[in-house]
Length: 236
Image (cartoon, rainbow, N blue to C red; front, side, top):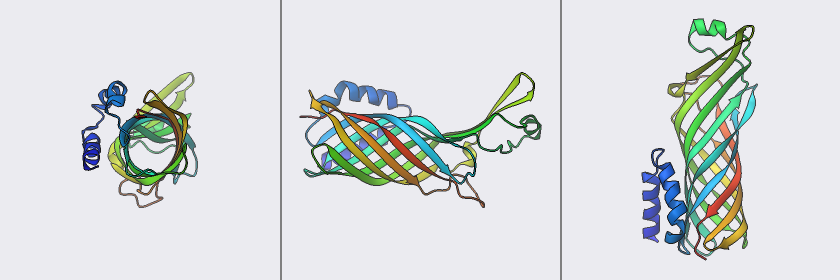
């Protein structure tokens, strides 16, 4: 068991945006080769509905999420699930115009058609999964997220038939780390055949860290509703 946990920690440490494609490819090629009854990998693909609390106006955003999952069986009904999700974003659309910090540009951004904020993260949840039946399980645990990019995008028509788009990098204004609590429900849609199967899931996570640095006003936090499928490489 110590070997499995150490392997999982090494997997999380070595995983980064630079190697995410190679890691996914290795799981696709060799996932079933390294799988045992107590240790196996999964690929995860789904959609994220993100809510940024603190805005009185604006529309919640949808995005994709992708990652790798490590499944470590502790007992017949209990598993440790570390995950690495390098593609995970939050956002809000059509928010009231915020100043860009450039007076000349602000003068052009009159009555913008849209004003959007997008935050990109690497999510690393570590969950404890409880098997409730042959097909249904529930998981919960903490998640830490690392900011990789943050942009505000504005669209305006200062002159008829002319559309001005301004994209500003606001990463320096956003806290680089977010912490969340996660609860996850999973159902085995297709039991493993030949070492591979399909599971579907729905997940809710609640962030606790104020997104904005040095914020003395309204606190901005996130909630995520995620759903999709995982593709485990499981030894039967």
